[in-house]
Image 1 (cartoon, chains in turn orange, yellow):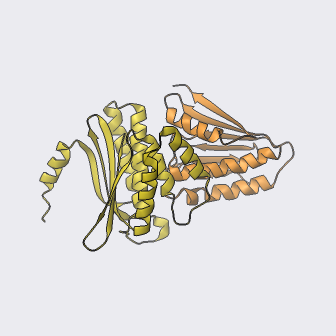
Image 2 (cartoon, chains in turn cyan, orange; image 1 turned 135 degrees about the vertical axis):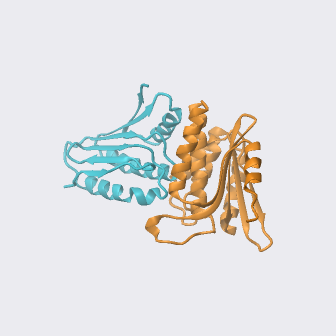
Image 3 (cartoon, one colour; image 1 turned 30 degrees about the horizontal axis):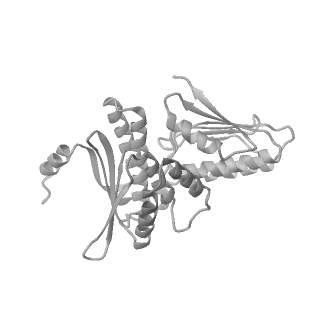
Length: 130
Length: 181
């Protein structure tokens, strides 16, 4: 059984809160660490353990609010969504809510870039009004 | 001291340079300069899209210096990299430009040239497709991710990304990259 994963935000890395009991994965804040692969390594370790302990009736919800991320984070996020997409293909409902501020069309376009890659999961683009 | 600081300062101010940083670049410099630049542009009432683009390009270019400059200040890995380079942000005829410069290895220089040449002829849709394709690729052991970073830069510029590679007398290569928004 996985425990809650909680990582505090820094200037260049987001807050991470993964709650296995609620099946809720939340990433919020900007992401441009020096080494994105290293920063997210513990997150992937947690996620793989969580996904391996599949429980019936599980519905995974992912809440993302990342106004800006750098190119190395982009690659990491694609891997992250790929892992969840594989779950969705196995029939486990996965819903991603990609939130962006109303005036941040860059964040919207980045969300669309991921949305277009995903088929089995539900990938919503959610506007946050000003 | 042989550097005339006032002369340097006047030259940069007259050229409409917002800032110029030359020296060791680290992640905390990226964060600090990036935040100051954003605040500066917001106070100038620059459009939020232009501000985001300048910030994003600055981050990619500075992180390229951190990853690729051959002038390394070695230290414990957990402290992060510290490498020499220069970064300049300015305005020319109402357009922002971001220039970075650093010494680079021969192989990396060739990859940068090949990538930028390839992107010269791409429009924004082609760059988007190219970005998505490269993002899908497995990890390239030769690259620390700079390929994707440069495509990201090219997607945000209004003109093709320019670069120069100067070969110094002792055979070292100095790379400059200029992005115009």
